[in-house]
Length: 160
Image (cartoon, rainbow, N blue to C red; front, side, top):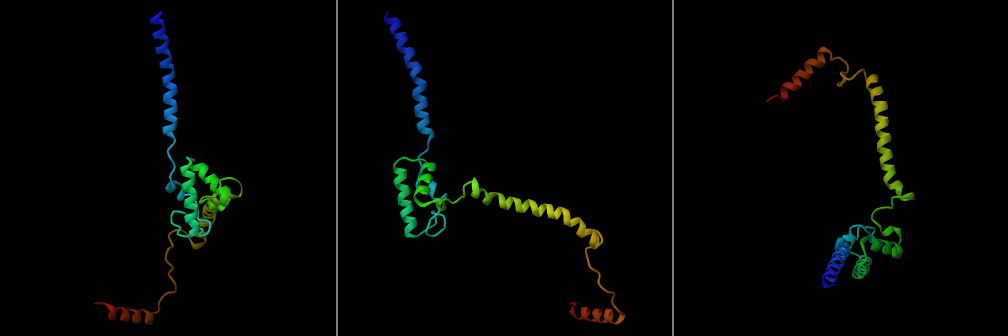
């Protein structure tokens, strides 16, 4: 009887061990957020510069608010959500990747693609119009004998 009870107790302890390690791992896997983690991803709403380099009273107020949120144990995303609720979308350093904010990412890509396509289309036409790839130098009009003589005299004066 005691042996069965000891075996049952050992089995319960072994069953509880993965649950305890999972809870400890989950707590350890969530790193504690700091003010410096958040500062480089948000802006000072008064200055319009990243909070980590802003020096205004508004920046100090935002840092103080972030410190309060860090002390409450909030994650980085929760802190950014709180800042957006407090100050609006302009507090984020990067625009949102949906809606109108997606244009900040898509427009530069579209411009590069259009420029490359235009280059691929127009450069061959331009090279044909200029007379081929070998004509890199523009020869200009031929020199007369008098001009050639004067050029030689000028060049001779500058030779050392």
